[in-house]
Length: 139
Ligand code: ADP
Ligand code: MG
Image (cartoon, rainbow, N blue to C red; front, side, top):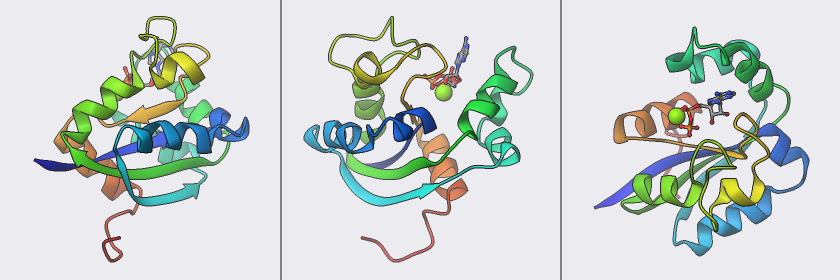
């Protein structure tokens, strides 16, 4: 089934100039870019985006990290896009991510792991809506 998912290139990867290379990895895997925008989350917006992690020991560091600079927010489409993107992205900790995954290549540690990728249809829908990527005409 043709499916949409959401990815976000995290601020330090954007700052290092890796946006294009990361997007190229996704496009090469057949994920089609449907929407894309650069934006800088406030700490409050970062808290909302990562609400499911509130209260965890790493939460405030995560909020500071994600709101430190612009991110690249992207809607991708493919058959089985959610599962395929998660596989391409790899494990949360780049040191544990398989060879060939985006986090293995571009991640630095278990917080600075290059990209976010939606983990289920419900979160994909929520995250696309959160970033305001649903309102304009389909690409
Ligand atoms: P994923 O992004 O693989 O779905 P999680 O949803 O568990 O991982 O965590 C969300 C984000 O929080 C991670 O991508 C990472 O940036 C950060 N994070 C997760 N676990 C830790 C940790 N133990 N220490 C620091 N940051 C973490
Ligand atoms: Mg997650």
